[in-house]
Image 1 (cartoon, rainbow, N blue to C red):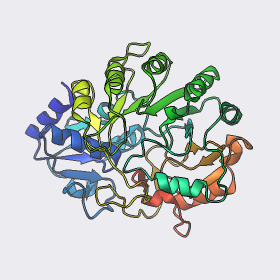
Image 2 (image 1 turned 180 degrees about the vertical axis):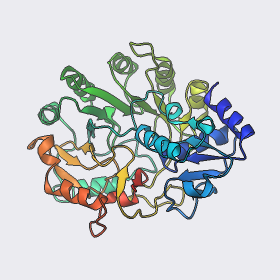
Image 3 (image 1 turned 60 degrees about the horizontal axis):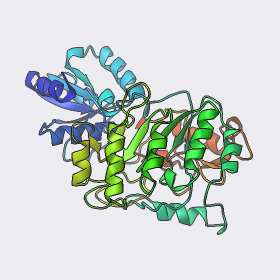
Length: 390
């Protein structure tokens, strides 16, 4: 029985059905169910702090609904799914009334979970030609060049090599960051270098403005998680949708990794995919459409915003390790992919080892902040990827 059929069966057998989790996974589960004409009764979280609700639905604390005849769809990443599963066992919640949504959202089972292994996310250049409507490119550009108008805008192979020399061998290298990574013409060479060094390499890309031959070359690389950002109806992403683009999309959604699994793990867009892309992906991929305010770096009523969290908090992507970081073209290491305003500059990987940077003053200050010291300003408290910790 597939995911949608399981949810339909759960609704038939329960008085009410809630999505457990109001973050990225939970929101995408809700949108997928809405497209299938399946309505849920609301969202459930461990500790309710969002009194305004979400998508017109209530957000309730688990203690408010646990005694009712309800079904739960867990819309959480791997780490939080395990934590909540244990909590539900303590409540003696009927496991037959739980559907696990993480495997459906993240078919690769790789990305999106807390992990001891660090991820270094590579921003290969500054200034993105895709320039999505809901991406704070101007904030990044203004801050990056604030003190030095001649600061390196394009990562070189020498800079990349110097940085990965300072990264733990077990670290995952993710080509994504704050830009379309493949718009740096050296990106494929960087991916090959990271693979040769023994790193697991992931990619998140539009695959726009590269040739079909380059697309084929990338698809033959032994990559891990691959996310595909596709063109949308409202042109929020400035992706050139010519015949060459659709030819690449058709190729990618049908490509296979060496082990026979799909090359693409997940597809998303800033709004609904354009009609031709949707037709190509139909029956193969759900196209996810969550839009965030980037931890307060964007202001728009159409974006999902987080009310300020209080107390001890944790990241849904990397727990309290905070080890999913952003590398900029000149070696600067930022806290994470939400930090377009460069609020948390951790150090420079050309000059320091990753281990040294993670023990420096800025990271110690951030850790104290997420541990509950609210006198310390941390971006995480307004971030949609953050959760409170009991």
